[in-house]
Amino acid sequence: MGKEGRMIFIGERINTGFKDIKAAVEDKNPAAIHDWAKKQTEAGATYLDVNLGAVSADPADMCWMIEQTQSVVDTPISIDTNKPAILAEAIKVCNQPPLINSSTAAVEKMEVFLPIAAEHNASIIGLSMDESGSPKDADMRVEKAGMFVMTAMEMGIPPEHIFLDPIAMPMKFMQEQQQEILSAVRQYLLFSDPAPHIVCGLSNIANGTTHKALINRTFLVMAIACGMDAAICDVMDKDLVNAAKCAELIMNKEIYADAFAI
Image (cartoon, rainbow, N blue to C red):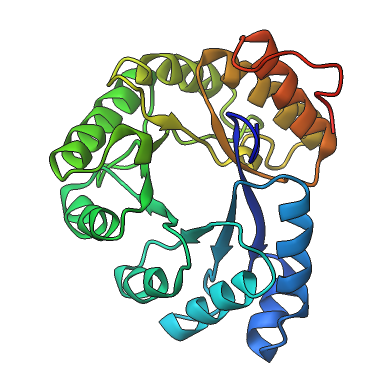
């Protein structure tokens, strides 16, 4: 797991939605970015998600964030943007093939994002939705994800570079959606051999709840049992990381060792 095993942890913390990262970008003071890059890497992050958010529409600012991250660690980057202009510039400064976060299954989105991924040997997250909006059930999630996989593979992107996101919905407001998400995850495994990766933005599940850590941890373990093998999450949460590692052991995806926990 992490860098040494199967579970792919995508560190969520270099994001201008957090006050310290927003200030870092606005002031061009990289200290907070350096700090979180090091801490998340030490915690076992497979990728570091870098998200400029609404702070700026200037590709140079995203490039600066990526360059500052890479100046202190060699962990691959997850370029978190839905803006083609930012992606086109940001991918050029990545030292290693990145993960693109993300495209939807809308034709106009795939026509822009998938060729960039193919050209740069990058991996890419495909959201299981299109221009009609967020999915309402497992069937819609499977239909949109299947379209994304088919289109990506037609463009020469192999399954191991495809990450499918069933779109996590907040438990507090859409409790009934959790079973639909897990059902879709199980079906994603049937798309190809090897199967695509399956990922979610884990913090969305517990958004607005009191027991966020417990809900995130429990959902991730259940999703791993259904086939999920990646998560955009708080990699600093040792209980979460260890629960994922234990779930992988129980699913016989890792060889047991007494020292499996960090």
